[in-house]
Amino acid sequence: MPDQLPPTQLGWKNYFQSVRRIVAELNRNHGNYRIHDHEFVEIVVIVEGALLHHTVLGDSRPVPGDVFLFRPGAWHGYAEVQGLCLYKCCFDAALLGKELSWMIDEPLLGRLLWAIPLAPKQHGMVSFHLPPDKFARCCELLDKLCALGQENYVNHFGDHLGLLIQVLSLLARNVDRESRGRHPKSHRAVVAALKLIDDAPTEAWSLTRLAERTHIEPTYFVRLFSAVVGLSPMAYVNRRRLELATNLLRRHDITVGEVGAMSGWVDANYFSRSFRKHFGMTPSRSRARFTEGPKRPRRAGRSATAAASGELIRQD
Image 1 (cartoon, rainbow, N blue to C red):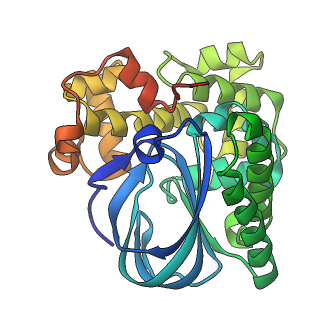
Image 2 (cartoon, rainbow, N blue to C red; image 1 turned 90 degrees about the vertical axis):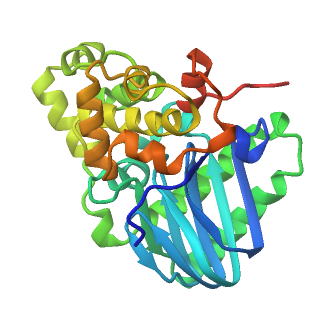
């Protein structure tokens, strides 16, 4: 496995050049692709061919029916590609705190999108294999989602969202049992807290403030949240801030302290320690190795923070 972070991060707007918030593609002749991470959520389904897949969880050689889900910040890359055909289904991370936020209350969907990838050992990634019949059904749904790309997106957003939900539901039902585990019933306070954090990760959240906003006793709130999400409330806040910081670091000429402050950390040293613990290197070392060069603007302001946190510029 490469002992490094991705050399680039793919942003929603600069990757898709589109106002769409859900995109599906069938790439029949995918080539090698350098290690990278994303600001958005990506689902990859292997159809045929061979490759060496570098991921944050290690190297593997996927086979048809293998599925990979990457939350923002989880990196991967393709090497030694031969006849590779795959589906990619990507969606704006802001959907997690809005249109898809109800999924945290569903046992399997909550595990697929939150509990499993956010577990410390998973580093934002889920991988599993679909049996033949489920693989065929998944391809059918993805074909329909790909076809919708030819339609007017604004008029068909509901169709995109409906098909995405069907894809996610199918995948959630087929996550490996050892990865799936037992998922306790969620609670309105957990759902409310996730919406608050995902909508505004840079807010000065504290356990007391989150508990007050969700109208529940703090100790009980921590127990509920940790059981459902797989992280404590403040650990989840830090995870969302790290997802934001990775983009700011690579794309904007601001100091590490400014990146930490714009991502929600008051203490720059705590930000650096958290970054190193999660990514295996300091923010400065990450920037020195993996900046995007001439694409980075000189300074970052409020608009840069909004873009990094997954907000889209909507157009008619």
